[in-house]
Each structure stands twice: as structure tokens, then as C-alpha cells.
Length: 301
Image 1 (cartoon, helix red, strand yellow):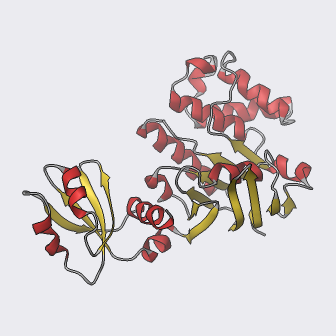
Image 2: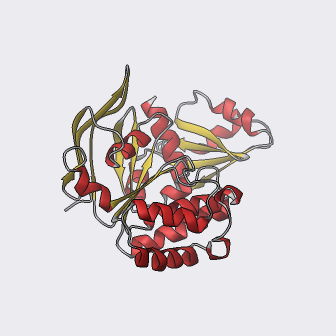
Image 3: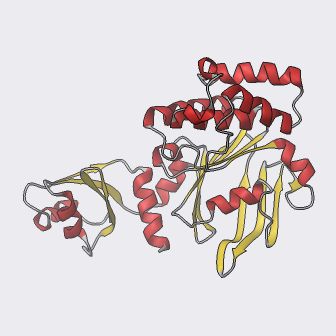
């Protein structure tokens, strides 16, 4: 049985169709990444699976149970972490854990043992008596994850959990997710970070509320046509402008101080050099998720 199955799932907000007849299957034990531009429908999908929003059409099942007609069978098995920090700022780390565990029906004895284990594993034990409002951004996200895990859910629904968090804290957060994956938990995570997408066992690219591509990261990268080039130049923005409309350039975008280009495999990339600013260089590099995202976003526009 899959952890998540949707068929024809749709949700509208007024004139905006946020999720459009979406079909999706997520296997048990997967770390499944949702990618896509802002407004693609990622948060709406997660909120429907979390039973926070009711679908307008279609169906969604979590471990075989309907999110609309069997909510009482779904909610004990899921842990939902929203984009916004939702802990009580004037409660301590320990008090927040105790409160949300009580809401979820975790017994007093289980609360104590699970709280101690989670705080230790997430590096929060020494901050257990600190009020949540005085935690760093990374610590706040780990606290939210800890409260999400207090009732031992089988499926984690994480809506861009590391947005705005520093790189070190993001790596630590994903170390924790890797441990949960080894335990057999299923994770559905929306992320704007392509290095996080590479860590997923499967990904889906959403646009306009529909899945445009899905598979393992390697499978999705293999479907994007062309080779990836890296263009270095004294003025990267001038190099990007020079590539606009050039035949053979499937997509081009800035990444730091270089330009990443998807290039048609039938053409010799050396012919780009005369078109670029003086001092520019071109080299071929392995495809990455940044290029995939840029290509799929441009194709869906």
C-alpha cells in the first residue's frame, strides 16, 4: 500500500485553480520532494493531505484512508509542519513539546521519554528551558519538527521547513530527516532548495497545480534535453543577456557569479565564445537540479 494516493485532486480559491486534477502516488518509506515555482500548488496539496483543507473534487488517501471521510483514521498517522513558526513563543522548548503531545493524546510517561530522546537527537537538550521566542531560526525549525514527531507519525508533511534557515542548520535538519527515513518513516517535503531535492528518493515538479515531471532526481535530470554548460565572465549579467535567444540555448540562468546553460547536444558550445563578453569561458559540467528547475519552470511558463 502506498503512503499517499491522489486521483483527480482539485482545489480552487475563487478564480484561482490551485490544484488541478492531480494524480500522485508516494510509496511508504519514501522521501518525496515537491518542487515548483511560487503558486504551483505545493502548500495547498500538503494542507489537503493534512486534512486542513477540503478538496473540491477528486480524492486523496493516506495509508488507504480518505482525507475527507476518514479524517479520524488519517490524523493520528500524520505529522504536519507548516511554513510559519507555530509554537507558543512564551512557552519553553520543553513546555511546547508537552503541550502539543497532550493535544495529540500522548501519555505522560511517553511524553517524558519521547521528549528527552527528541531533544537529545536534535541538539536541543541544553535549550529545553529556553522560551521558544529566544531560539535561533534553525532551532525553531527543529523544535517544530520535534513537536511534529512527539506522537510518532508514519507520514511527515513538511511545507518548506528550512526556508530562511542558515546552511549549517539546513544540513542538520536533513541529517535528522535521513535518520527518520532509515527508520521507515515516509516524508513529503516541499522545498525551494535544489540541494535538498537531490537528497530525496523521488521528486515531483508542480506547475499550475499539476505534476509536470516526476521520478528519482537522476531520472528527472535525464529527461531534460541537452548538456549543461557553465559560463564564467567578468560581468555574468552581460553574459546572460548575450545568450538570450541564441539557437541551441534551451535555458540560461544566473547561479552566483556564473551562468548555467542548457545546450542542445547537436551543437558545439565553442561557438558561444564569440557571442560572449571578452574574457568569458565555457565548460561542460554534469547536470544538476538547478538547471532542471530552470528548464521546467521556463517550459511551464
